[in-house]
Length: 262
Image (cartoon, rainbow, N blue to C red; front, side, top):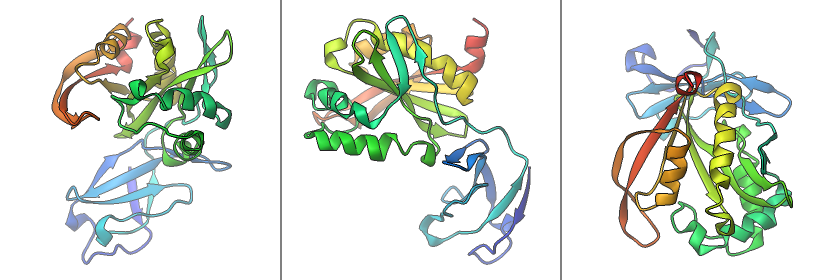
């Protein structure tokens, strides 16, 4: 991969001399009407970074210590950030849309559902509308694949989501999911996850998928294990939940080659 500096860097000296290191090679970005693009980060001493995209993009610098524009020739494939609509025996998985706000509010306002999630309970329908507009619908612009809405075939109700919410190293994605409490223990999340995984590997372009759960969330552990994820370790006392206690989080991964061997 060849890099050319096209704008002076806001640091004295040659950029190579300050230890610029290439970090992400497949952190992709898409903008409406602009198609897909490679996006590459270069890191400096683990604290500063330059980001490059071959669409017009806002150039960031950390702590006002490093900024610049770079031109990249070559690079690896980029991620496909738009997901298709797919069907399973009982479900339709499709991109979430603003019309799902009421169904989202139905479970996002349930304290039982959100007690082990990182985000707070939605107290109003307007909060759910805002979540869709600002969190879900902006994902492609932020280099994150669209979320799958989980929809019941029998009545068209959106009962949850399953998605890759974090992208690292360009081709590693972390999965999250949430399901309306009324529909727990019916195998819906396992059915949705089983359908989404091949899409993330073959169409979206991930090489590795990761997932974790609160150690006391046995139902989530069963979903993860049923999907074929391999346990790789435990994050000890990773974070505190809404009860104020710190919990361990077992973490798992699935490689593209794992499902190719099946």
